[in-house]
Image 1 (tube, one colour):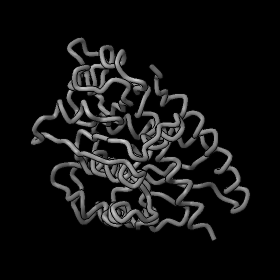
Image 2 (cartoon, rainbow, N blue to C red):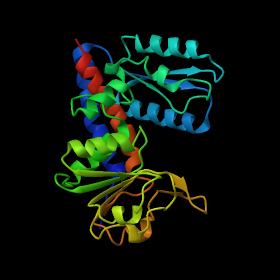
Image 3 (cartoon, rainbow, N blue to C red):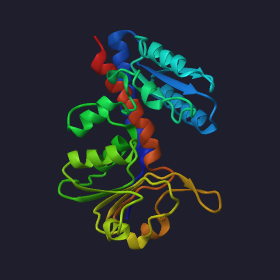
Length: 282
């Protein structure tokens, strides 16, 4: 069994991005800039933003964090995002999710121009992905595809099963695999015969948010398993959606939690930002 090391792979990618960021600065006389909008004081969001800022510093990207109060109005939030997106020193913009409940996420995200949508959440970028045209792909699916590529996992003609259909992971992941010539099945909470479907997968991507839900009897011998979950087990220890210890004995490759997909998500955010800067530089 091969352990898919997202932490090491992400470090390699950050090294590659450092060279591109330095070359951009030398050519254009300014750093690549990433704008991050943080509304409210959700503890988990604070951690995610700190991690993104730290990763930017490592690569040589300038980060601009715009902190807004939780009680901000819809109109004020939209104007703030629009103003940040209009800053020429900012090449990519993301809005840290989730937002306070009174805010309309869709309308706020729509204020980010498609060329600066480094999270890949815009309707335009999702549409481009669905049409198999060039655009920005959301970070977690892009990170998973990068792991499959760097670990030489063949997708063409393989049966890939994606468990989960969120707009952030499941849906774009299925489209990425389809665009890579896999035969794709998407499973969700209403799926019947989940065990049998998962057991037929050559590549199994799990993103459902249920600790250790995928057990060894649900996995094909020699399959490649990608665990996107981030949960706490009964002892408070971080774990994924896959019963790692038992499933690992049966598969050819598996990503751990932590240290698998998570580091790749931030690495792909940085990569999307560098790509955006290079596309728009004049």
